[in-house]
Image 1: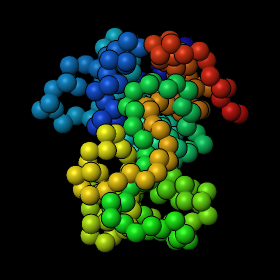
Image 2: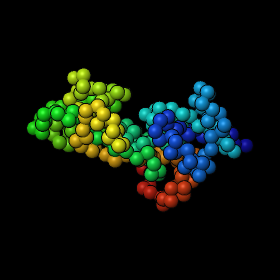
Image 3: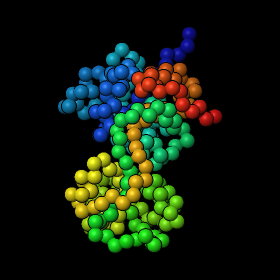
Image 4: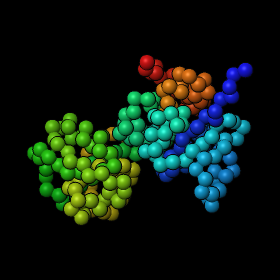
Length: 224
């Protein structure tokens, strides 16, 4: 008799994407238990109704880490996180068409032109995407890593500009900044661990459930 499979672990992000993701998850058959919706609960791991799956709720950047290293077999996260880390063991087969925003460069509205600069100092929690953006322009970017309150960096002289997520642009405006360049458009993706997709049929079934829910045909093949 074969050994019983361990619960399939599905990582979901705290924050802006989660509210939009929950209805899609329900349509794909991933419904958290009641404790998940208990605002007084400090639990991070939850059962899924009628399933051997469990949910873990972690920070968005950690969703990618858990899935890439196989601690979780699947998850939902923004394409910004997928591209920032570019883990070889991470596969993003379904665009969920939620969590739309953009990754942009912003600087003070009264900043002097730096069109001919060969070096810039930028505050961001996306050092890899930021450096690649400026490398394409032949500019060396010194990235100051921040995880929040990005808009304060130019005001306090920490960096001349920032690279951050932008939705309406209101926060930038209220802090005296203007959007000067869009690095990438972002939406949320279903991500899976490549090895788990090849070895655990439940992961493939989950992918197909989300594809059907999103009305998408199969996309690119998983690499070897």
